[in-house]
Length: 58
Image 1 (tube, rainbow, N blue to C red):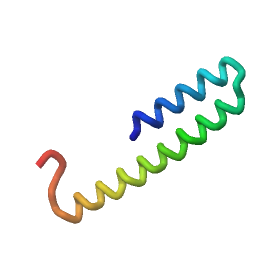
Image 2 (image 1 turned 135 degrees about the vertical axis):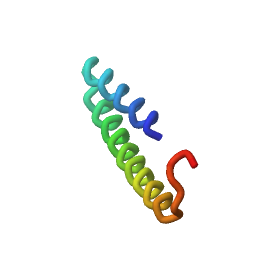
Image 3 (image 1 turned 90 degrees about the vertical axis):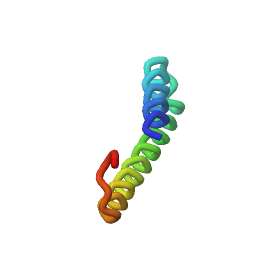
């Protein structure tokens, strides 16, 4: 999911360089939403693993 956020960020940067403001803004907004979803899922996963008592890689 983080890969998708980075992809949309790159699309936004390229669109901004070429002057496509609407496309750049939309891609940046999508990248931001996907990034925050990734962060929330990461935190939920870390909390779930801590509750279950298993360490990473076990």
